[in-house]
Length: 222
Length: 222
DNA sequence: TTTCAAATTATGATGCATCATATTTGCTGT
DNA sequence: ACAGCAAATATGATGCATCATAATTTGAAA
Image 1 (spheres, protein in one colour):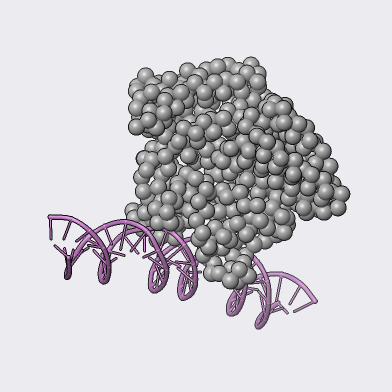
Image 2: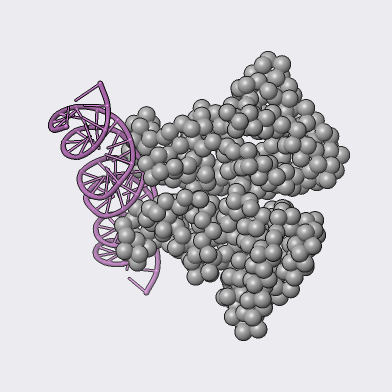
C-alpha cells in the first residue's frame, strides 16, 4: 500500500508518521474538515512532537493538509474547480501511464491486472466498498508500476493523496460503478494498443468519477 | 519568481529557508553532487537548525535533494532515464497548460507573453545566459498562470525544481536555441488554437531541450 | 443578565541539548 | 612505514523547553 515516494524511505520517525497519516487520508479515516493537533497526535502515537511536526509539514506542503491559520491544520475540502483541474491532469498523466504500460506489459503484468479486477468484482458483489476503493486505487497504481515510471508514480501518489478523503467518502455512500471501465483498459493492454489504453483510462476517470462530481456539486449547493 | 506553492505561504522560518534553497537550486547555484550540511546552512543564515531541517526535509521529500545515507544530503544528478520520463510528463502537462491558456488568453495575457519573449531575445543577443534561463522559465510558467490552473502550477514547479541545477548548467555552457520554439506557441495562442498551442509547446520541450539530452548523454559516457 | 476585557489555556514555532552513528584522525604495535 | 584499532569529531535524529499568539474562559461592571 505504501507506494514509497522516496526510493529510500529512510526509517526516521517523521517518515513513519507521514506514512501513517497518508494511509489514514487515503482510507478516509480523516474526514474533510477534520482538525489535526500536533501534540494530540504525538501523544496518540507515543512520540514527541518533532516527528509529527515533520510529517504534518510535509503533508501541508503537498496540500494534502491545509494550514488555514498558523495554528489550524485541517483536512481540506475539495472544490468542484479543483476536482475538474485534477481530473484533467489525471487524464493526461494516467493516460501516459496506461499507454506506456500497454507497450511494456508482459504476461505476468496482465495477470496482475486481471487479479486486481477480479478481486474488485468480488468485493463489489460482497458490498465491501472499502476494499473496492482500495482495489480501484491498486489498479490505477499497477498501471504506473507496469509502465516503469517511478517519477510519475510520485506525482500521481500525491494527487491521490488529495483525493483520498473525497473518494473514500463517495465510496462509503455506495456509488461505485467504477469497476466497469477497467475492463476496456485491460483489453487494450492485452492487445498492446497504447492509444486505446490511454483513451480507456480517460473514460474511466471521466465516467467512473461521475458520481464524485455529483457528490461535490450537491455539497456545493448546500 | 516564487510561484508560491501554497496559496498561503505562512511566513515561518522553515518556508523562508525553503524558498531560499529553491531559488538557489533553480538558479544553479547548487551544483549537482553538492553536499548540504544543516548546521552549516543554519550558521550561514543565522538561524537554528530547526528551520533548515524543515526546509531540507521538504526538498528531500520532493526529490529536489537526495539523502544518500542518513547523514549525506546532496543535490542529485539527473539521469538520462529520469530526464526522458520527466520530458514525457512535461509534454502532457505543459500541453494541457498551453491548450487551456489558448482558450483563456486575453489581450493582456498575450502582451505579457510577448514581453517575456522579447526580453528573452534581448538577453540572448546580450549573451546573458542566466537571464535567458530565467526568462525561458518565466515563459513556461506564464502559460500555466494564464491557463488559471494553480494545482498544475504546483506540480510543474516541483518538476522544474528538479531540473533546475541541470538546466542552469546547460545554459551556462551557452547552448540555448531554446527561444525559437516559443514563437509558434505564441502564434497558436493568438489564434486561440488550443491543440496547436499544445503541439507547439511539445515541440519546444522536445527540440529546445535537445541540448540538455546531449549534455546528459555525454556525461553518462564519462 | 449581558457585555467586554483581562487572565488563562492551547497550540504551533523555534531554539537547543542530547543521542546515535558515521567519518576522520591519531596512536600503537609489528 | 604501514596496518589496525581507538579516540575524537561531525552530523542528522529526536526530544523537549520556551516563546508568541490565538482561542477560550472567567469575572466584574453596567
